[in-house]
Length: 158
Image 1 (tube, rainbow, N blue to C red):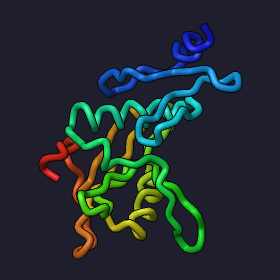
Image 2 (cartoon, rainbow, N blue to C red):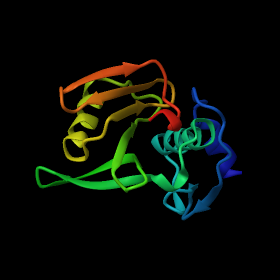
Image 3 (cartoon, rainbow, N blue to C red):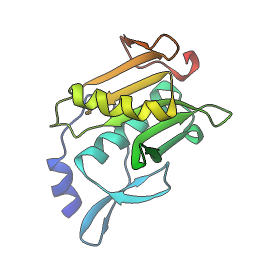
């Protein structure tokens, strides 16, 4: 019953429905993260992450084995975490995805955050999403430019 009450407060997203595995853990609702292979606390941001990862895998053809959640990196001797990173077949990062809760507006600050992560990872694709709005850009690292794309690309065209 608690799951139902908590889920009823979770906002419908601008993403296809995802069949999420929920559980009660220590009095809190948890969701199974297939990338981390464990249950994590269900927060509004995690709600967006799980739906977006499901979308990438099941609708855009991204291989589950090449995606990772909560990827640690060091930036200016400070520990940071990328929400989701896509790797290529040689374990080189190709895309960073940053999530916000649905009630959080995507702003320049969000893009600044993901751009700082890209100083370290140097990927050609950046995505930010709050579950309602999604922005993807292609980064030209050599020219230090970027171009916003009309839609999230299928894995086959990366």
